[in-house]
Length: 263
Image (tube, rainbow, N blue to C red; front, side):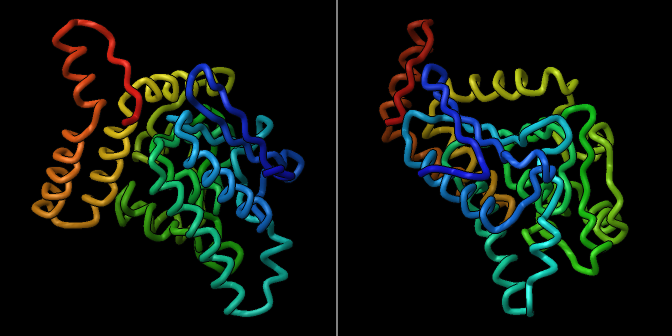
């Protein structure tokens, strides 16, 4: 598929890919075209067994994704179309969250509104020191619509999430690290290198085990611990049917690097 608002780049030698929202003149703001192209790109990479880890970022140095395209939001005519737009963004977030590959969000600047909501759907968030994060929808007379009212409290707790959503205030990257909204903070000049380093490291791991760990964590957090442990045991057991489990244990006993194939 040819994209007009995003870039998709593969590094075949490293088994990783990078998706870049490419609207720097609009601070990479989300519109329906961007949402659909991102959905198509993640579908494309999900189907590519050679891609074992994905990085998502924004073009330029100012913004990861600075929120929604306000002109498009302003043109939404009624509640039905408003709900449709919210579901479009929610479906993309679920797609990222449920992807078999780990997704590293390289937050190179403003991650606001829908931008923060997409970032929260990723597995690992690495932010530049200059990044700013927030859910400012309250200042437009609306609320987060792409899952922000659900994922933010799950990440940072109900009280802090309410404070951010109710006030619309932004937090710095360092404050985001302190409250658990991001996982690592680096200088902007080192952001891409750090994201690649993490992606390359994950791409060397057993793909099926990574997918199982992702499913166990994401699904397990939504149920009580007994059911969560049942989910974990089921994923653990399934991996004993894989060639990668045989290779991993054999490589350990032979004191060599494992060569995982994803089978």
